[in-house]
Length: 74
Image (cartoon, rainbow, N blue to C red; front, side, top):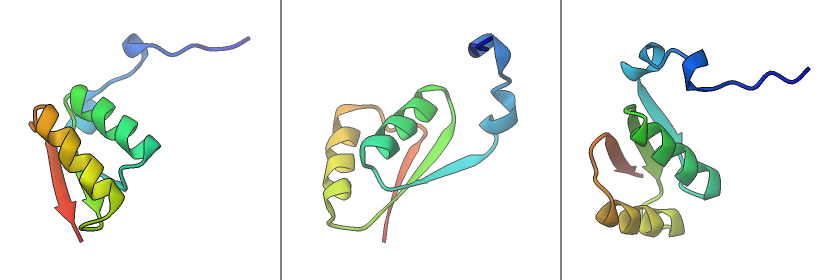
């Protein structure tokens, strides 16, 4: 039988005190970063300065609140 997990099945307090680093801002990096940020986690993005992901992340950050999302460029 398939087990479906919901928000009631997890304990977010286990990761809320950690800083979560996501390298890249492609299709998965974008979704994971925004989901974690919206869940109240501290998220750090690692991007190559001037790259396509860097431009996409900057555009996204201008449109959405930046609380909990930090952008590092290499």
